[in-house]
Amino acid sequence: MVEQTEQTISPIGRFITFEGGEGAGKSTQIKLLAQRLEKAGLQTLVTREPGGSPGAEVIRHLLLSGIGHLIGGAQAEALLFAAARDDHVRTLIEPALARGVWVLCDRFYDSTRVYQGKLGDVSPALLNALQDVTIGTMQPDLTIILDVPVEIGLKRAAVRRGTAAPDRFEGETTDFHRKLRDAYRQIATAEPGRCVLIDADAEPKLVADRIWLAVQDRLLGWPQAKVKAGAKTAAKAGAKPGKAKAKAKTA
Ligand code: T5A
Image (tube, rainbow, N blue to C red; front, side, top):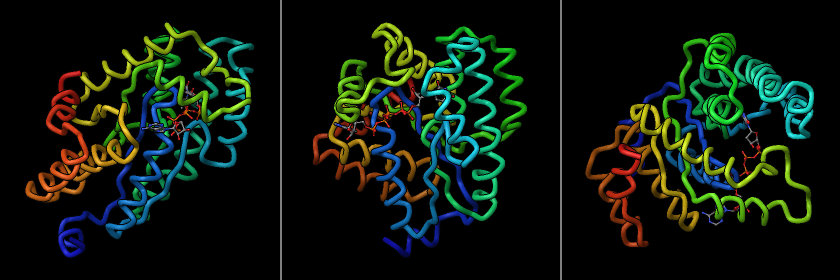
């Protein structure tokens, strides 16, 4: 298994982003994928947005407190997310990729497109301009969109939060979160080359197997036989990999 890994893995760094609604399981899954990649001999860096770099973490604190929304609504928030992203990309992501590290990022610009664009009505022209300034032509090599029913995601987020108050975005209405889910599904449909939609309404281990299949298939170039072997493992545990894959292409 390790021999195959060494023969087929590209030495350049890859950029994988995780997206989805509240409580979809991004933080949980990003750690599990990093463990699998490290086991395969790849150096990884797990990071998040908003935040990831010292400067961006300061802006994260402002954003999640709701100050951006208070001073100028979704447009002000879009500007703050962009400022945080600019620092994060320049000081952390680009240097890591240049060193050959695989960067796994919990949320990236799709979050801005969905939260501030689709739901906040910030104009595509402004979002495109911000994207040009912050990331230019850089694109994730793969975007994993975790899809769960809204009620389940919100319940998970509430359990994790415990007695703490919901943040600015968790506190939105159920209708907001439904639209959020739809918007992510639309992105998966519109950009099937970059995105894969993963059914995340399952045990964490099973979701991790689905993600691993997608990463093997899309980025590691492992032989089909190997992918099928992974699919069998998932099927044994009750997964329907064929269905998940078809959904990713059509949802
Ligand atoms: N935002 C962000 C924007 O509006 N615009 C932007 O441009 C960007 C970058 C960030 C907020 O900022 C917004 C979006 C967000 O609202 P955050 O605190 O970073 O907020 O939180 P989120 O990214 O939303 O992530 P969450 O913390 O809500 O959830 P995760 O990471 O998706 O889920 P996770 O892994 O922490 O799991 C939540 C709980 O569920 C359990 C976990 O153990 C945990 O308790 N769990 C499962 N339970 C059952 N089955 C599974 N499969 C499970 N997977 C996890």
